Image (cartoon, rainbow, N blue to C red; front, side, top):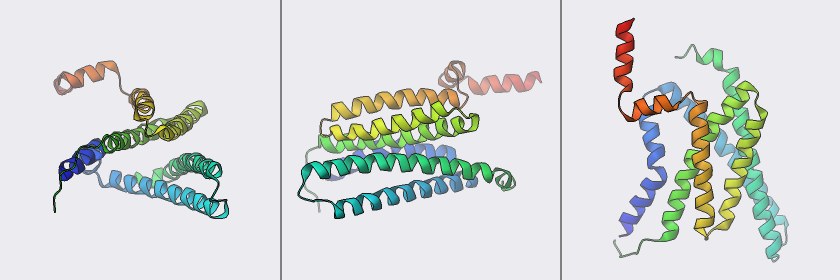
Length: 217
């Protein structure tokens, strides 16, 4: 059962992201470079926020539960701010490099834990949210819609703060998936999607339509 729980939670958390990587990124070397660069910026932001939080904890009163909780909240907020700042820096870097990039073309029985499943579903949601946030954030920067940039930052803060509701997973997972659903719709339309395209995709008629348009030309 231990192995089943491990693989089940792993595929729940990372299955969608791995599928997206295999079908949309892995075949394009340039997209792989973008992915690695984006991951580097994200890891640097986490490193900086972790370093600040670690130093703050060391110089604070470790016997004060209220102070430690406040530092934890501070660490989460700082992490979100740094992640979004580095997302913007990554966007600016891509903009600067755009012209150059164009030229490159032992087994024991164990019951299934609700906590493990909840963490798996939360991880999946966070991964997908970062993808949606990236689409909306970059488009907002491109079109200078700063209210949309603020919406991404605020929604990121909301989702991060919802984790403080754990282990009351209903209070954290349900709102997170509501935000995920809304951001997914926003990112879908931002990327040029429409109800007509979605209907054609679900009914497998998009290929026939493209062939018909090609023949008519």
